[in-house]
Figure (cartoon, rainbow, N blue to C red):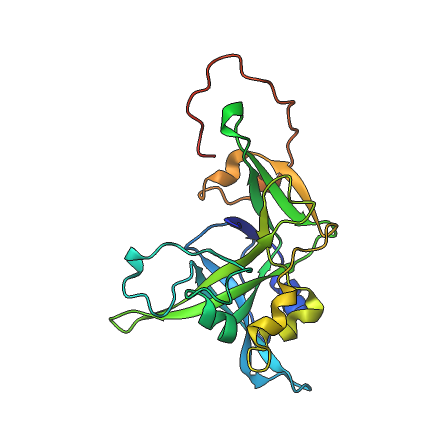
Length: 250
């Protein structure tokens, strides 16, 4: 899964990488958490200058997907991820897979290695980033939810797939990463049906990411500074000599 990520690139870098037509200034965000507003990029109704391809525009959406048919979001589970293997058929995501695919820019994401409970060892957080740095784009889905009082909110989820060899020792899932040369095909919901872009929802190349062990500061949403990504040294695990008590959730 993907439960925390970061976007620390400059607006200029995002403009260049994603070819969006407009983007507001925003500060670096080192600890983006569910229910917070996230930056997404969608295809526009108008064509890009000098091209017959749709222009792209950026907007903010709530990280937590709400299907249009939900009557009361308070009674609906928080959907921050959508499994790529089942999103085409799943009722919650079927319409968005066909009509509202988006790109979610990121500088990397956090994941936790959780040892078996019987070891008594704590979970270890990792900052997972592109080896060459820069910004990348997760595949995402968007839905504009209209409540009974007429108010609307844009909501989004990040698509996930099985982990590649680099991530597998930490977690069995990872975000879907859309290559830059495939942005247009991913965002083209008019001619590219979900099954036509299924090949894009595969694990990223094994050499794309590197994993950096970091402290547990990322566990708390109130921590939002660059110190979250500071590497730490991992101590050699020591087998417990006392009876194992209750583990921390993190």
